[in-house]
Image (tube, rainbow, N blue to C red; front, top):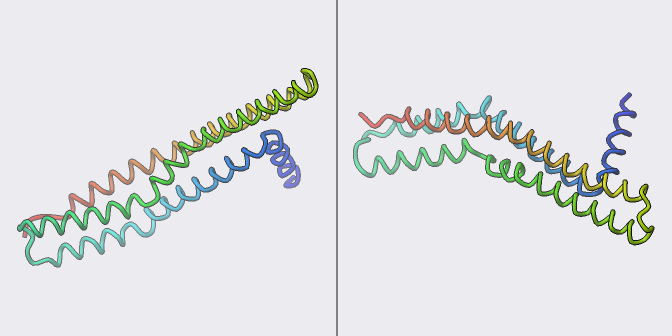
Amino acid sequence: MFSDAYLAIIRFMEMGGDVLWFIAGLTFLMWTLIFERIWFFRNEHRLLVLEATTVWEHRTERKSWSAHQVREGIISNAASRIAGSLPIIETCVALCPLFGLLGTVTGMIAVFDAMATQGGNARSMAAGVSMATIPTMSGMIASLSGLVGTTYLKRKVEYETELFEDNLTLDH
């Protein structure tokens, strides 16, 4: 059963050409980073908020201009750590369809090559068309799957950043 699935995946990857391996690697990286952010929110986020809040709460004075600047610095640092690798994830989501288009171009080159060398042999042209469409489909599916994860993470980052900012009180 495992070997059948493995062979089906290898056959699919061969039909899509070399670009499909790049899409698979990019998708793996993207989802690894998404799961890392989810793990961060489940495990490390509370500690980050607690540390930053403790730093702010131990200040004796919180009303001056310099205290407001310190607060803004704490918020900025925490927001950066909360967002983490989100920009890289968004870049991966944007790159997936572009790699799919690259696969389309390489597949069409194979079609034109088959037409030039074999005079329009339908069987050889079909392999090129397959090599052109599979990476496009794969890039779009990878991008859409990453879009789901990115949307969840963006909302979580915005919510947690606003909540953290609201918890750093200015009065004392």
